[in-house]
Image 1 (cartoon, rainbow, N blue to C red):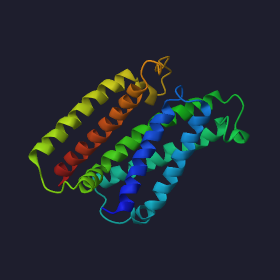
Image 2: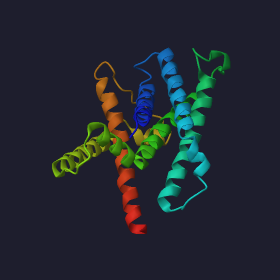
Image 3: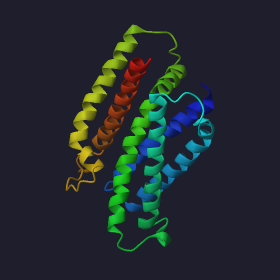
Image 4: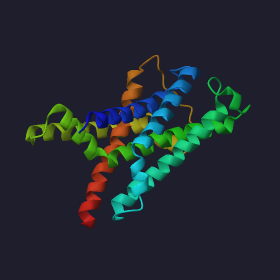
Length: 223
């Protein structure tokens, strides 16, 4: 793995972290929320520039179930990101206030809705790239030889993340937020800021792992 590729992977994970930070709106003030959001879109643009060859090859090659799922995921992610970008400009109060609409409450609701779906779809997209992620980590740490103990530790860790992710999904009412269900729940950042990020990080991990193992199962069934 080249240094450039590792930097790209780091920036992709940074984008995930920025999305979670943007969800912590009541922990940030509005200005920082918009700054983080702008940085996120800059990273997304960079990600697409780096992966521009994929768009040229999307119509080529075998279209099996896994590849079609990957294409569908990327299309959904593009739609969610565009909705989030458009609505962010319409409700901006600091960086792009000249483009904002007055009293755009419904637009704010759509913006939040798109934000949660973007995180969910990115987690799934991460799952489709999980072998690449693990390969990069192994290469960076020099762990090229098989190791049974390491494999067991990693699988136990994955199981722990999944269990915590299920717990966090209920604690953060993540499913309700994906359904645009109005909820009065609000995280108390005075009580625990770190747990907010740990909870959402575990949800991302859960979705990525379910996607990864689900696609492996599909590959075996359709082989």
